[in-house]
Length: 219
Ligand code: ADP
Image 1 (cartoon, protein in one colour):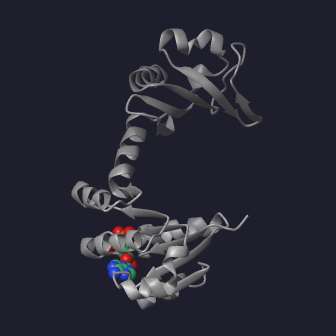
Image 2 (spheres, rainbow, N blue to C red; image 1 turned 90 degrees about the horizontal axis):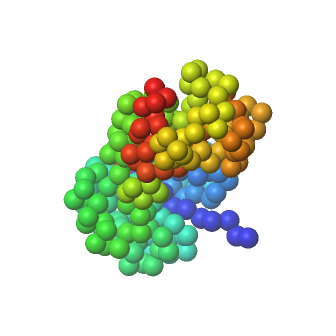
């Protein structure tokens, strides 16, 4: 299978971190930035890195941007450049365009332009960290919908040696334990007799309310 090709436009804090991680995942990444020094810093790390202004249609054409599987507009502060780049990428027929938005309004504009995925790194990270600070046992979570969430919770000392049957989260809180990650390995769809140990990680699914009440019990 042909390796997927990504173009990351804007190698600031967000773009450079994203581009590096894509390379770590063995993907091909072209980094584009109008700042020469920034490009130089990244040239050893990325598959290719070039100095270019992404608001110039001809430049994007000559790079062959439409052949990339995904282009990420990681320009934030210069909203005009972000919007102009996004519209050019869509017009040039890039299959998937992802863009970072600084504000809700910036995001709305990108949405109207047909950007396939809009990311709000600061807002989303703020929300995520707030959840984790409010619930010290919460390691991570995925919102499946407005109502349902999958959460990773570390098992506190007070549940050391407690079986799922005894804890009975489904009857008490309405949420289910779908996996337990132990140092010895992961138990998928654990049985009632499975026992929790301190520092295991439980993966639970339920409504936000159910998970909240379960977390309160663990705190
Ligand atoms: P962050 O907050 O993630 O650091 P910034 O918006 O500060 O994001 O940085 C975005 C990067 O995008 C900068 O390195 C800047 O040089 C680059 N950039 C801005 N406009 C353009 C453009 N038109 N073409 C290419 N690169 C650009």
